Length: 435
Image 1 (cartoon, rainbow, N blue to C red):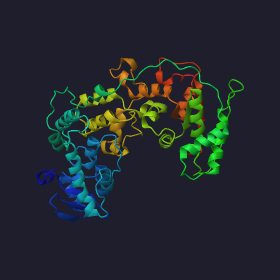
Image 2: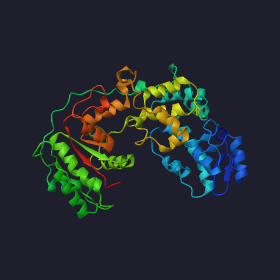
Image 3: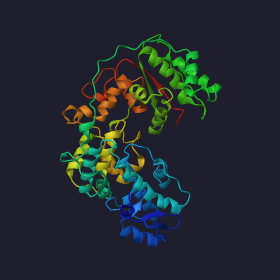
Image 4: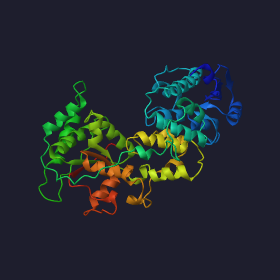
């Protein structure tokens, strides 16, 4: 970005303890009290980092329709589904820029961050550049504050776009596949010795060897013993203190049992945060991301997932309060892991920017789904999650969903998400002590 382009960016407003600082692209600096900062906010546009947070610091309403330029919106467009801390320092670190340790430096870093991201769009190797250019043009027409700068970097699309521009991302999503039910799982037990050795491999040679953690893994292995009588599973009630490493300890025998029996272990937990924690811990089991994707699945209720039909109807239905909303959600959905709006790679701060009600309206709600009558049924994130779980070794679910599956004795094919899991889903390990 040359100096002329840099001067197109508005003044940065960065709130402090008592007021705010404002600094322009040419280096003009002001310290503002709260009253003066409010006047700048109302006059706009400004370059900000997290519009909602700035508004809270100034005690004003964060109207998403105001034409401030939020650096986080630019990040969400240029690097969808990528993690970043929603602060000036977090943005700088994610982009490989020096991280300042003072307010003036942090304010100036927003110019550098915008420059780095906009210049990145000029790279001929930028992923799906033509599609991204179409999306930028569509968001520019919708009134997105960054639209002109982004579209200017990407240039005019070569090919003609449909009525939704490059935001009709379902065209590029893979369809789910239906597989024949696998045979019943085996019943080979997991020895305490094997569980301890697997745990040691998971943690690595350099890790601290904790005797209590190894004992926990050995005890958890007993729950995988073959049934001696139908309807009487082996139940282990185990408790350990914080910091013992319970998650890795029960995942070790679970992976052994699933692998050697061609089966599946459901791990049930209480909160979404714990689901994320357990999912992160499975990185130790499957170092290869492709292998983990095939062997680990997360199951949640329908309301946690993006509904492609709701997204399409939002785009067609009119002008939303935040013109960036549908476009940024579409950009994320194009590259996300599984369409999970309540965790995974969906940035929590993006929901804060766009509005919790807006994001919630895009999720699926029980009773609304039309299943196979939906245009997007074969690409539906929920249907993909259901079928992925049927082929996985480890399924991480919440207690409610696990109890539903445990209570159903017969398949319910008319309601796919309530259908009994294949017989290879043989065990559930419940973790309540982590809460």
